[in-house]
Image (cartoon, rainbow, N blue to C red; front, side, top):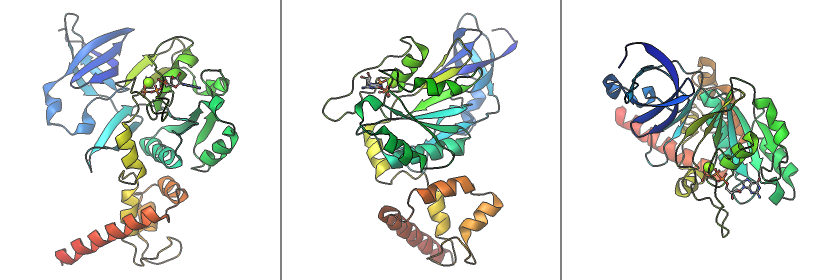
Length: 321
Ligand SMILES: Nc1nc2c(ncn2[C@@H]2O[C@H](COP(=O)(O)OP(=O)(O)OP(=O)(O)O)[C@@H](O)[C@H]2O)c(=O)[nH]1
Ligand SMILES: [Mg+2]
């Protein structure tokens, strides 16, 4: 192994094996031992820039992860309270949803929250517009998720709307595609690059769900200097859970609400409002709170969850005293 440090970019992660993209080559690499005592978020993810020692004969050695400009994470579907670290240094998060049974307003809102919180610009791509009679209405609905969100309806198969996406393809940018299996993420990449870069496969006729064709996150570089990260769609079980509110994207906000002095606080002019205090101190971003509000915070599911959380809090509080 030579002792000279290089900087490369992680293009693939599989368990503890990493691939570094460096000078047009893909180098297999492993982590320096000292990583293993560290927090999970210090481990390299796809999109990370890393300092490494090049080994022409075998695995190179990753020494450290460079500071990230953005970092997307979401609650792990399988383990409560555990975060799943997805990708780093992404400029645009393409949230890909098909205009068929795949479409879910709440799921889009959650992805938008993941993107905003992680420091990437959320861009919702509604695919398969050829299968939908009124794409315009859905576009407007998604626009109501947040002012920060941009929305495009496209058909990768018929090449409709693709030119609108050119503005994101500027040299040096990194785009990551998120969305459920079968939404058309890989097909979109192929359409945009004009070649068969990614494997794709048909969704099940019966319920339009995908077959998990893409199995791991992967970064590809285009000739124009844009990097694209394709990701596998989430498991349907996980998705169902998410739609039932087990996903806790906003649980911190719900918990904060339970700390307001008045249980019916509207977070407006009431004294002792925990939400306003958290926004003022920077603990909570105003943007995320707006998003949560737009989600219809008062719907029954959240109400039930809120009551549950405030019950737990009261119990804990009583115990402490
Ligand atoms: N009608 C229509 N079908 C599309 C369009 N885009 C993708 N599809 C089809 O949808 C199916 C799934 O596409 P993929 O690109 O494999 O989906 P994916 O999001 O990459 O799925 P995973 O890799 O499993 O996460 C394929 O049969 C595509 O041909 C579109 O714009 N219109
Ligand atoms: Mg795919």
